[in-house]
Image (cartoon, rainbow, N blue to C red; front, side, top):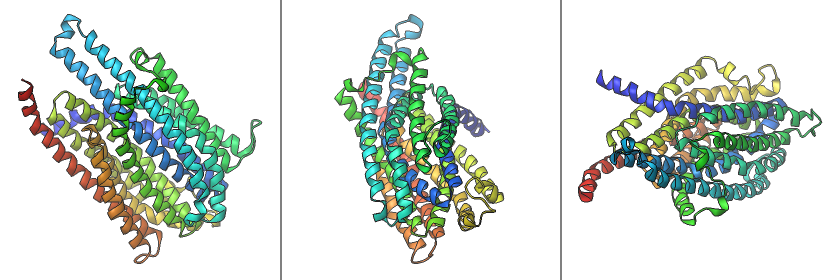
Length: 482
């Protein structure tokens, strides 16, 4: 009974931060979902080409996000240390909290400035890479017509990468300060704006040029810029955030930039390892033809939607672990793992039941069951949903594991483990089951499942062992300090 009470209390504490983050993630993924649905309206070929472009864009965007993700943990730890210092010196009673707070404020401002510098450099480099990869798509076994249409969309998406990463840098700052609520409203508004701009640029309404598939990329880039400006304006209106929000990235402290890169590069590599795993499988799916690639795109988008709940739980668990360790609460940090996994299992199980009971309804936004051209893609996608119902549980668990390790400032282990789980186990399994043993796309997805399950088990084991080591070392550190 006591354990259930503790779990309920910990769940409330975790979800207080995770829910707004997960809802923000879901609203944000609605941008790409809207894009995908609009592609489907343009036809199977457009869905295949647009899906290929989004895979490449998301690969580079995800790695860029990884470079600034540690900012949230660093901000949370700085705030917690200031809070503990104030309590230990009796600052709450004496009003002497100004000195610790001033030190924390200076540290946080430096972190935000450095995060903006990293985001700018990553966004510019990623935009160039995006266009170059698009030009090489035909060399990667893709249909020539599909590759050509994807190139136009990638050129339109590239300018949106810099404001997208600026948004993520400011977002990590607000999350680290435990004030993420404005993110949800801004992202919800961006979904509506994105849908309207998509329609306008596709069809040339309101005096805008008729751009077809490329118009979806133009609309998405525009929305990323508007979202960043809205989040910046919101943070400037918050009296707790405004004094700390410093965007003059050209004045960033080189040492702070190096520290963020030291923490962020393994995170980017971890995110890139996972995104690359899915990107390679998308290329492999394309080798089975446009219908298989369209089915893969639709089902992968469903996985991506549910994955956002895992991202919210992962970020919340990560921030809370950083905070609890800064306060010396190792037992609370240990419970966070179980709480996050229980919440993730509940959500993915419910969604999996929906996949299994009403697959036609789930896939209707992507395929028209009455259109002969969509029948093959719909059939393939329906067969994949059974596997996805199980796969997303392991996908959620491995993402939570990465976040937990990030809370320990252990960003290198996550990368090493994903190399094993995704590339040494998952990709060979996917290739083996898709080609020599299977001969269809279902084997590809079974290989994905094996890779994610392996990665999740290794990450969670690493967290438990690392946390136990920290807890054992803590009394010795206290004695030495005394």
